[in-house]
Length: 331
Ligand code: WQD
Image 1 (cartoon, protein in one colour):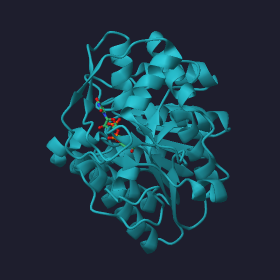
Image 2 (spheres, rainbow, N blue to C red):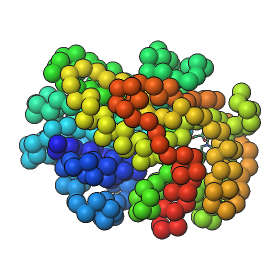
Image 3 (tube, helix red, strand yellow):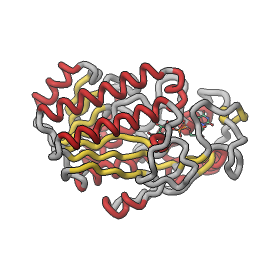
């Protein structure tokens, strides 16, 4: 299939492009490099031997987005382009709602007008809010999310669901990611956010390389085994393979919802200690105040992905830590 990956130069998008190409698909990418680097496109070519067809602009530019749909006979879309930092979204709600919602509305309008009937949407476990009922399942009622990022994802799920109800020939897949970390085994692509990282693992990586002096652990007074936040960390390559399975197997009319997680939760300090042990490095940290918008615990019920997609996360926490460090040493 010819598949458009919006945000395809980003951390998750680039890994999805690699897996799509290696599964035999042709890939088109739109990215504005607001949270990614141009050289990622070269690295995708180095890994797969094939180039993506690339367009540089933000999807808020509806005219340019329409040109892409005109120029390409698209079979499907994987919509990753979005702002995605929980903490940052609390202080920048206008930017998060504008970017995340408007880009999704532009994409769905083009799908309708150009008869592209298969979309896989990069959603998030943050749509579950703070359910207190863990492990999370796809059917868990959408709680009151705890931050604008999570709310924007829940709103985009609503938009896509309503669009599918209006155009019943469409296949809309909502993949709720847990915490993607790690990097491709080549070390050529990985998570390299611009500026100070919002997320845990890239921050640990930059402390281990000496680029940042110390990790702040946001709270050790949560109701968890060691007091620090527990999350379901999933290797980004496992996550990317889940997209290939979804775009191929859910390619039938309807709304399909699935968690992409391992079902295993790890605390912040467990991640820090695993990273130190696997890579033989020291990660200096200090306990800080809780971060607004954070919840104590969140990990997946991955049953539906296994039953409906035949997909199960394969890689271990050790793989995630080792591949992150391998990427760091090459950049
Ligand atoms: C993880 C844990 C923090 C940074 C992410 C993505 C979001 C979504 C869900 C895909 C928390 C703690 C973090 C730091 C810390 N994924 N932490 N010090 O908030 O779970 O959200 O997964 O859609 O896009 O952002 O991930 O890595 O920011 O935090 O102590 O410097 O690490 O409190 O417990 P989060 P995160």
